Image 1 (tube, rainbow, N blue to C red):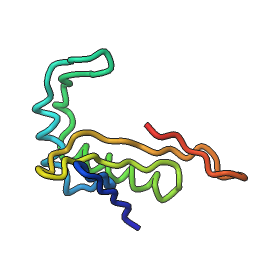
Image 2 (cartoon, one colour):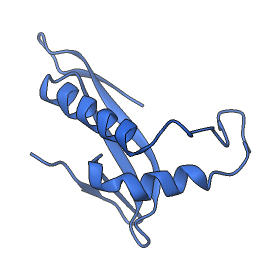
Image 3 (tube, rainbow, N blue to C red):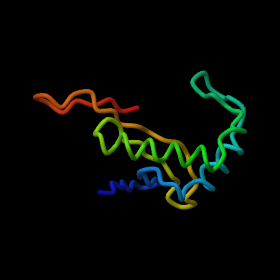
Image 4 (cartoon, one colour):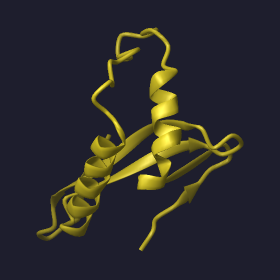
Length: 101
């Protein structure tokens, strides 16, 4: 099942291998840190296509194990990758309990 959420300005969807060019482009065009929680520019020289493929495979595996789901956040108008959010399963006992962030 593919979960896609559409808002007025965003599309939130599971990360896929086909998003590599969009993802790497946004990472290479990061601005310097502007806020205390903003990491700003990062050295991603080791984050090549093979690294991204392994990352996506790990995300898919963890989703199949009901441990975590990783979603990319994209601008609806330009399809630009803006960031990601993950949903982590904390418990499936008597309640569904997750951490979003």
